[in-house]
Image (cartoon, rainbow, N blue to C red; front, side, top):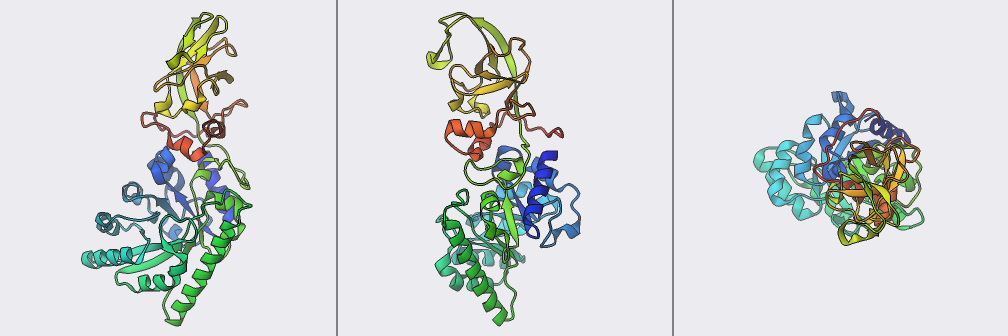
Amino acid sequence: MRAIAGNFRTIAERVSPLGVIAVLKADAYGLGARMIAEALCSGVPAERLALHSNAATPSAFAVAELSEAMEVVGFGLPVLILGTVLPDEIEAAVEAGVRVPVAGLDEARAISEVARRVGKTARCHVVVDTGMGRIGVRLCEARETIPKIIELPGLVVEGMYSHFPCANDPENPVSEKQVEGFKGLCSGVAAQRQADHRSAATWLHIANSDGINNVESALREPFTHVRTGLNLYGLFDTEGARTLELKPALALKARLAQVRELKKGDRIGYGGTYECERDMRVGTVAAGYADGLPLALSNKGALLIRGKRCPVIGRVSMDYTTVSLENCAEARAGDVVFCFGGDSPEAIQISEWAALKKTHPYEVICSIGRRVRRVKSYEL
């Protein structure tokens, strides 16, 4: 947990004076949202909820849906749902004080109606589609639509935000176009609100982890916040710059279940995809693709035993993975196996798995199975 807290401080210092919203969607990418929340904001004082801060705790948490929001509403920080809410979720979200996303005028009207009915004020963040093409008020319609949303009773438009689809590529001009479009919208809405003697949205954010590393203009006014998820764990996208000096914060460990001697010609695993070329010592690790080990490791990857890389031989199965122990003659049943992470010079990196799987680190860590026990470690 030290590494996660340290990474957060590094990010906060990098983007100061902007605040940092910690993204805990998908159960903190499968790592345990409550556990990560506790690590980030234990003992947060009430005054910490000020708009701008670069302290060692987040300005808010962000999640993807209501059920995730309810997991972390008790930590003393605002909780923002990124994206949208379903009609039957609005009342519970408003009652819980969750920051409700507004992706269109019809949705805003529905939220307003519910807020008035339950006698609550709904704090909202308007999502603007500046180029993601997924959800939100389209940029070309936003200057006309957002003032109508702001006028609705029972709503306080606390913020506006957008999302980068290409921020992992610093050479792609799309991100800068999005920034300029969003800034133009903010100026227009602010000017209109000032003319009406009304306040405009005070939280403005577009940068994700990739944006923090690759889109400098997203870290300056008028933006007030950034959002970060993957960088908290010392991880980066497989492409793009890595301007932050972060420490890996994750390790996936299993145990060596059995050690055996196999003969030349013996085959291993489903489909018999590996044939022993000689008599050899092999180990069976009690972890498989149900635990998050990619099938792509089959006959290609390695696991770390006693600080030594042991090649995966045969096909990774649901519950077990077989490795060659020719590099680690001293291995014994019961040994700890580092599937990835750890402080060894030979440690396997999550990026290696992502490359083998031809994907990105997000998918790798989100694939860690439910039966894997999530444990706080102050060694990381």
